[in-house]
Length: 140
Length: 292
Image (cartoon, rainbow over all chains, first blue to last red):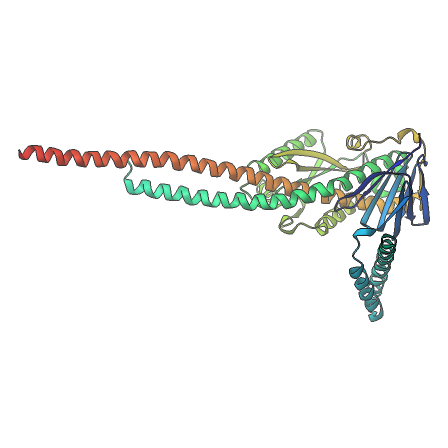
């Protein structure tokens, strides 16, 4: 029966999550994709974005910063360079990171520096957004 | 019969040695804890990665990426991972023995073997015996980080693509538990689906083709170099944890041996001392008797 699908999120630091879920929505590099149990085999790189998964009628989310996902009919494996659950993100730190990256971007410099600053800005913004949303829903 | 003074000195010396080995054991235990946490945390990622890649290598046309090619080659490279420091029991000895054995086997098959060495101990050993060494990294374990793995991974993948070698094996200590290490010979290049299968449960073999996003070539070029970095990192972490485990066990044994020696010599010292006292007493008593 196609009831649930196993979602595993691993980072080089640890196995972040291993849980049966009903649905996964992941930020593929060519656009978001949703995975339900029984999905066909699929392999995709991920961009900086939000990974959402639904258990029952509860939706959880986490920030994923680069990685890739392997999908089989019974299992989704997400290998991310960095991944953080929404509730674990420190909003203050994320905000500070955004400001820092913006400043670096403005300072300019070598093209490689600028690019790096752009990437870290994108990462920081994503984390901030996810964290703030998680906080709002938990307060509501 | 050794003099009482020389015995006293001996006991003091053993006690000093014991203090040192005890301290080294403590240090190793603390380091072990840290490196153990790291390897246990890093393993799932590395194993998943290997699972995905071995799965992939079965489906994908091998010529689609330079790192996947299989060459009928005569050149073999062996990466030997030893420690930088000694005093860790059979840790380096086992590795070195296994690698020499392995190299000899390869040479018997008329293959040309080169060595890449991580760790000072292995380098010293093989250099002294003037084996063909292509590359060496030392001082990696003092402050082990992912950067080192990037370094080693980049060097190995470059040389594979350039054709410096056609096959690559790694010999390293796997961390089994705090008191147990296992010497592993693992094939890294070329990527072989069958051999790597054991650790990756794959339910999706019969499922036909994969969908790729973005296209295959792009995905592979992102994935494969990453894979080797991650594997290199895992191997370094395994070795580091195993080294501390081995050292802790070795120093524990040394402390215990020192304790035994101290006991034995102390007993002998006391016996000798008592014998001397008895002899003196007898002299006095004998002298008193003679005066009567």
